[in-house]
Image (cartoon, rainbow, N blue to C red; front, side):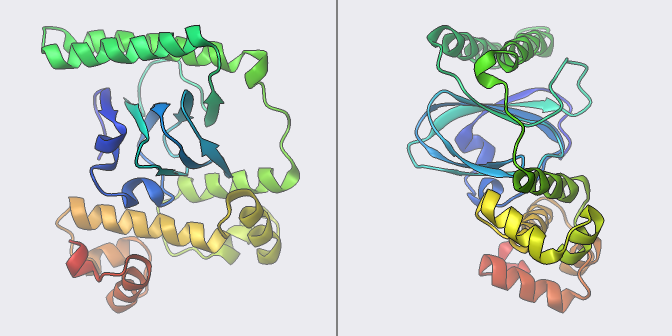
Length: 258
């Protein structure tokens, strides 16, 4: 669903109580700023898998492929910003480990202030929240220019993995195979599989399947489209094949998932 206003959610609210919403590789139609204050987990972002911990800030632009596996003690917040926002925002995904106490306190304070605005239901509430989001953007861009957050040029395999993930996220699933993506990237399927597996821990085909599965589960849960309509929109050859795919990747047929 397209978000028309800035929202602030806890990590539990972001997943809506359904782990697959975060654990399956997917992209969203809004920007995400995630601030983790407690706990650990794993992150797939920008074609790489990384560990997550306290005082980690994630910037995930709209249409960026990502996935998160969060430990049960993981606590934090997510700021959802519309894709068409006029705020000055970075255009590339980033994972920042914030070590400076002052910087940690600054972002936490901005999020707390935005929370208070949303809870008080005062006039011009969204204007106030947008002002807080603008300050969060300033905070984020200041962090990105710090020497400790300037990234070295990644190795060729990681660059290829990032290009593949960006390609997957730019397109709604339409049945394109891993070999199709490899051809578009100018590499062999074997080379693409090896590079993506080394960078993310999952093969290129697995990420494609997760992307399709996430899109299908979202459509099943959020729309009235029939399984046949969803199958056609996602590029499956038939409703029967779509049913087998969902059974294999989720353990349940579409009728049960709905």
